[in-house]
Amino acid sequence: MAEGYDTADVVTITHEEDPNPNSATRFAFLTDVLNCEEVRINSCTIAPGEKGPYHKHETQEELYVALDGPGQLVVDGEEVEIPENGVVRVPAETPRRFDNRSNTEQHWLMIGAPPVGSDDNMGEAVLVEE
Image 1 (spheres, rainbow, N blue to C red):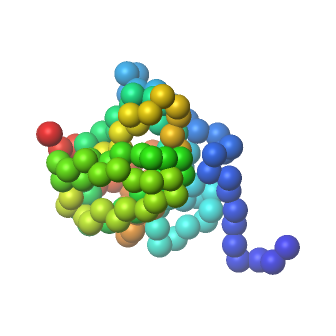
Image 2: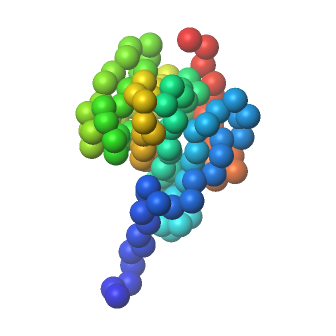
Image 3: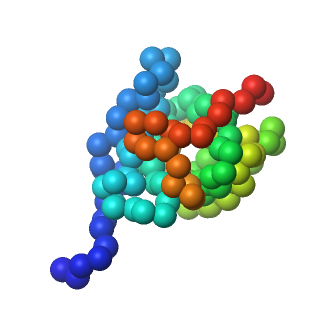
């Protein structure tokens, strides 16, 4: 096997429960698994009817990849439908959250740069009132 790259299966990797006891969302923190240095990357499994936290980042832009679809994001108060395998870039300082309005689990991949925070601390993420 060649050196200098790492792999992970974002659907089958172990996802940890959200620390919020009212949430059925699960996360897999992939930054360290993939030895990333310039981005943070997480996989998220969202139960039917779940919503993520409405938040923003001070300096980190994020890419949201809907591995199942369609998925929904709320970006700066606007609802955006994302087709399966669709990608959305959200700039820093822009409030966002994912929603699952379907009746099946959805899987998302989130990639953020620059790499702020850690697996235990989401760094500069700030919750925003809707």
